[in-house]
Length: 216
Length: 309
Image 1 (cartoon, rainbow over the protein chains, first blue to last red):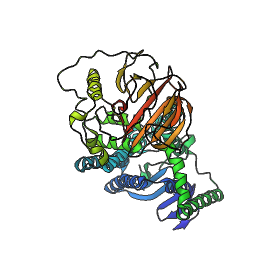
Image 2: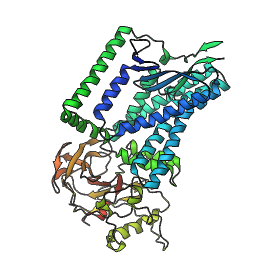
Image 3: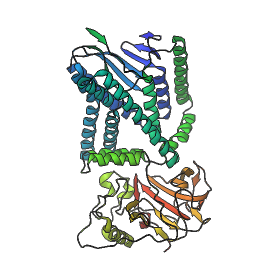
Image 4: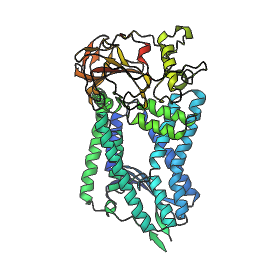
């Protein structure tokens, strides 16, 4: 375990896992306000999501370098000299795909035994999959789209396109969030999601899985 | 050649600039906050509970998130197309529940042409709630069909004109027996009933999640059951409104009031005056928009309440 700043915002490090102050803050808030057992369920959905990424990384011969727990989510940096863009797309998409699988399985189970809890798990997992598939750079969908464009066209061009796309989407969500907030009186669900994405964009962090070492 | 991954250019991708000392301070503050929270929950569970009770209703009050998400999870393996289901989660989770206050209080909405058909309507065959959600035993006293109020048959016959439209997933048109004694929320005739209706001006078909009761500004609004005030405030669509929770997953909402007499967190008794009729929010005239929600599903209050005709 290492203590001390080794990169921006990171203070605690356990082997390959680094934790930022923002994550600690988030943990504190969640710990304070969790009342209905929602948090363990979300942690489970997140674990399944990351399991998808890890499994794909292993299949493609990559190696996880770092697990970064920040304010805006969990990021996996992996070494993928043998992965290539195609593999990176699959690795990025495997998290949401695992979530979709979990959602379907839980829904089937819920239908079989008549459990609302299972339906709820299915809904949360589906939501996680859809959210992560948004074409925003910090999310898996954006990561996959970026790799696809970099692969088929050009990396710099892909970076510019994804940058513009992320900005447009985030600001559209912000605008919609503000409108919803005013219109509904108090509902800040969408606004929170948009601000979360904006912070993750500005901090250049997020929930995506990225290949940080690549051989061309 | 081994290349380090390049981050895309742009304002959001500046290189690390935080000073180590600043990072340390930030982290110390965050850890201190975490410690405070842990201490609060361990040594002052009552205070932590009070804090949650204050903040959580602000997030959850208007939307039954759990019910909405579960409904979406249920549709994954159901017959509803997944995209439609995603639309529903947007509608439900983000609270886009149009108040649909387009009917003048005293006005009568344009009645659609009713063409009764002998064949059973899909609306009549709408799955009962117990197939969708497990409900408390209180509601499972499945009655014989004959016990249904006359209003149910009349309502379903009226709704047959809209058989081509899908009922929103968070609303149920079928009858659910509720062994509860509801008080009348306000004295006045129903000006716009629950369910599908044709917009009196635009002519399009929309679903009305509540019942509009025509009444003059200043008429008292009463709580229909004992309960707790989940929210009493002003929103753009509902205007000044009160949302009550009566336990067992039952919520009622009283919208477009001119004055509110209760505050969030108050306990109210059945028949207690909680507000006065008004025309705040999206309303074209004074009326009460009354909603009944049971286990996440909006239900037709006209089955259970005696409204003046």
